[in-house]
Picture 1 (cartoon, rainbow, N blue to C red):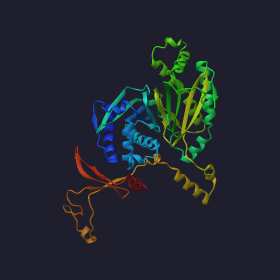
Picture 2 (cartoon, rainbow, N blue to C red):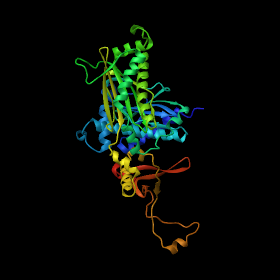
Picture 3 (tube, rainbow, N blue to C red):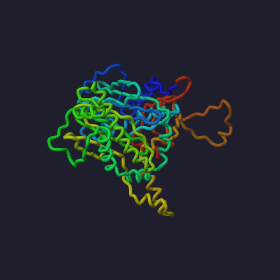
Length: 448
């Protein structure tokens, strides 16, 4: 019996989108039935997160460039002219995707479905379409704030045999993970993988080249993308112009170019190639003791677009020449800057060990912190009483608080105020509706 219920997924996403935009961005959103935002058909940005493990699929958030800028200014509390670069916009959209997909992942885990999510990728441009992974049906929901709209797309499928694949994730600390990532020769692995796969599967000879050939133009093109999740975070994509993509498809299927029945055949070949070459890189990480999984491949096709990682991921570009055609490969793996000597210091004692412990603590990133459970306390009010007064209390005694009736109650994390709310009762259970929150910086500091 399947544990994924699309009605539950829809409810989860609906609640998370409405609450996140309201509390974090002060942007009330309403769920609507159809797209009216013309910006979604013009220059737009898409933030995508991949699920892997016992839940496989993709969740993507689509917004216009104008709305993306508005979201960024609201999130950061700045004016549009204070945005330093598009990297800030990409990071904010990535954080939104992390929040929504992370909330959904928590619900899957509550249903005993083990899964991980990838670092978000960003696609931006004015002329492109995204063909998500072929895992389950595609579901869409639209949310509107004034004239701006957010389109959420998701495909999900259960893969109950994948639990063992992610069992070893998060058993290493950040220093060990980074040392193992650094031990992998990523350029050699990628270059050899591309050359071998093109030769064995397509009977095409390729050569790694240092720069784009003179006269090369990016025309309408197809990009196959896979993401890494687990101990290794990043993405891998391969892109070629459409004419060459059709030649590759004909070579793979053993037919003539004119015999290709549909674009979907081309997309399937690009999915397969990105999966195999990305899988070679994944194997290199597994061989050095890292636990990671690869997402199912997604396809982007169009004339004006870029598929990018967030700025926390340093992307390396590799160029190949194949029969007068150019193949572009991007491999981005999240890397933390750290001193290799810190790893060697693990065997030291005394002060050396203390220095290492401190270094480890500093290297813990916010993504790991997000998984730490904390206790929320709702405080109705406070009062002071003498010991003899407390001893006189009995059944029916009334304790007066300093909070007046109707005043907001306090929401505390680790005895630090983070928000105020009003008491609500739903299905005979008490809760609070948040009506006021402290600043984002103060909320993060309260977790320490």
